[in-house]
Length: 290
Image (cartoon, rainbow, N blue to C red; front, side, top):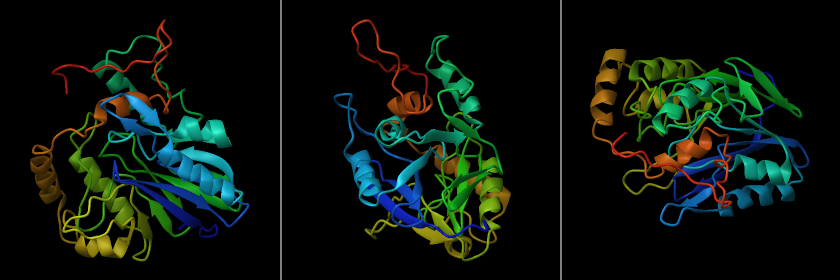
């Protein structure tokens, strides 16, 4: 595990998208990072608001933190990122894994985006490679490449904590779907094995929770608990068994409610498409394509 000090972690939960945003820091007045922020979006009106992001900003300001990095674990299909808004208010650099270029290439075709849309990741301030480290104050994070849900997923190791994105969920929820473009169940199985190879006591922080049986929402479990009790990939589940289960299950799932706006915004690092001649930005809806 990372030899740097263990972090303080503040979680924010968005009930509309079941998403956790994290502020990671080392006490009042320290440098901090934000992982997986949320921009509120009303699909009926096409309007965005910043209520969720403002809660994060208020906390960072109250704790007198300095925002160094704004990280995405992947290009989310279920919520829009608030990264540019956070950057405009607090500074910091917007970061994602370097395989985002693969995702951009795929969805440039899906949405028939014009030549102005770059597929080199240049919309982001920094592209992380597998094993690369970033420092913020007395803390550092290490990037762990965990594709499968998407071809660009990253987990972030900070001290004895691992922020796993959508790769794993709480033990009673299971694992991420793999049927989005570039997803692959065999690859996800192998990525999860990387996570489960960490020490038993390693804390795993979820990007989402979808609690069954009316249990309270939870955002953290451990490697040991996942290995013992994850309903999809506990000890003894083979790669073949997992791939069969995941493939059959994914075939029954509908698309996320916000996949069309989310992907178009998130592959642009949270920036909206260029405004048209009336000053308004527009998103595209491909018919019968997904």
